[in-house]
Image 1 (cartoon, rainbow, N blue to C red):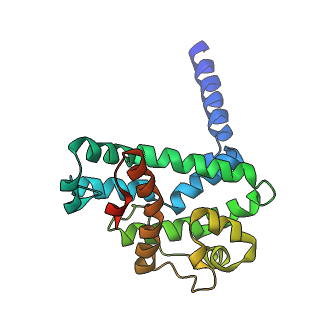
Image 2: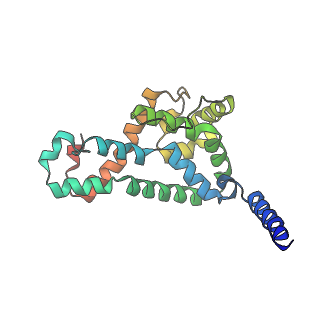
Image 3: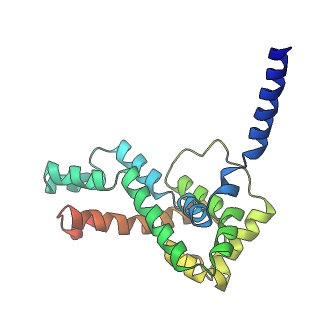
Length: 205
């Protein structure tokens, strides 16, 4: 009888524990939710990691012969996925702290579909394998994408993410456009790495 009662109590506790666990997106602090959506929107770290894995001379390619092995190693370390994502998260948290009045709307539009669709287009443009969860865009996600791209309320967010070029244009997130945006976004990280590793920035062009 005692062991039977113990099983009932254990089962009840397990059920309560299961009910108490909410999805991370619902329990995380708003600034952390924003940071997560920001990284999904701009998968720069994954893109750079894939490029580095493909070419040991990345990011200099044939120009790697113009720098020392130590300088090339310095650049690759500075642009490692962990380093880039940490920098992105800090940028996102700084933005969230500086824009408390619009943070709720910013999170809503990103989580509503803009982050997934734009990030997906960038991944496709960079030749990254699509996530297993990839699915066609819903009407709600397309509305969120259009709002992010054109609504004046999100001008600061577009500016902060480097996506201001979406304003006034088509809100589509096609692969070719994703490739162009991704190329522009990586320039800032590359420039910082060049300066940190004492490499002439002219080699970037």
